[in-house]
Amino acid sequence: MYRNTNKRQLSLAFAWDNCKVRSIGAIKSYKDVSYFQTELVGTWEEPDTGSDSEGDDEEYEEVEDENFGFESGSGEEGMKTSVVTDVNITSGDNYEELIKKEIEQLLEPGERAILKQNVTPNLEKISTAKWSPLHTLVLSMQMSCVDKLLENGVDIDLPDKEGLTALHKAIIGKKEAVISHLLRRGASPHVMDKDGATPLHYAVQVGAKMTVKLLIKYKVDVNVEDNEGWTPLHVAIQSRNRDIAKILLVNGADKNRKNKDGKTALDLSLCYGKDFKSYDLAKLLKTVPADSDLF
Picture 1: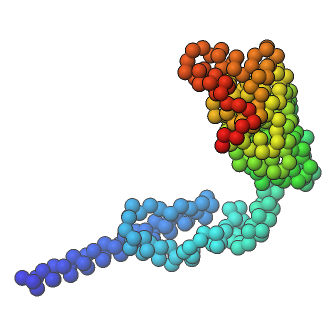
Picture 2 (picture 1 turned 180 degrees about the vertical axis):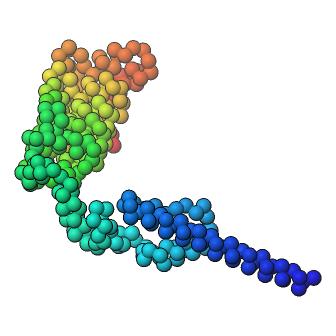
Picture 3 (picture 1 turned 90 degrees about the vertical axis):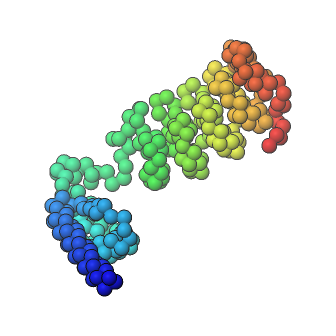
């Protein structure tokens, strides 16, 4: 009985091994076809075998290494292939230079002439009153490109037609890392737009509490008024943001300051009616003294 069982097990094992060999062969054939297609289109993705087995993955990698000469491990150390010339290169600098030459070959004579005329960024050619490269790169968080523009003499406080600077726009976009970077690079936290609104006004409006604290560290005037006499505290109460109103108050905001309509921050809080938020803000303005250290 046990002898027959052993023979049966050996037979099943042999059949299983044959099945695995055929599977590996199929994978190899599939990858040969995929690699042939790669040479035509320039890209290649590993096929999904549908296997979750660790052993199968190891055998799959062996087939890959055997047929294509790719090393297991970091892809950054592998060979790069130029799509246009199909040349293998190992140096990142050489790769970039080769790509530049390839692209230049693809350009028409007139296009190459434009490129040669603009060794450094020609901002006049890529700017309008509304669209500034600096502002666009700031909002897209392309900080290395922003730094290159600044190194080429671009004014970090360059305003658009609305008087908004890169710092204004980064604050409106609530991009805290960009805001910190611009301030470190020398962006003015005091600059006003055409309506007299400062970065602090906008930080309060969008509810950026950490940015409000950061700007205060840069010694901004918490009682600065826009063209309508509105201080950041007026804006905080209008936006019904208790936390930011409290930060402003304990850092010297004048709760008795009136705008050009003669309204204080408390007046604005009461204009919302008899809901709980109105009472809560009124209590804050009545009970929290300015210049106190509550933190």
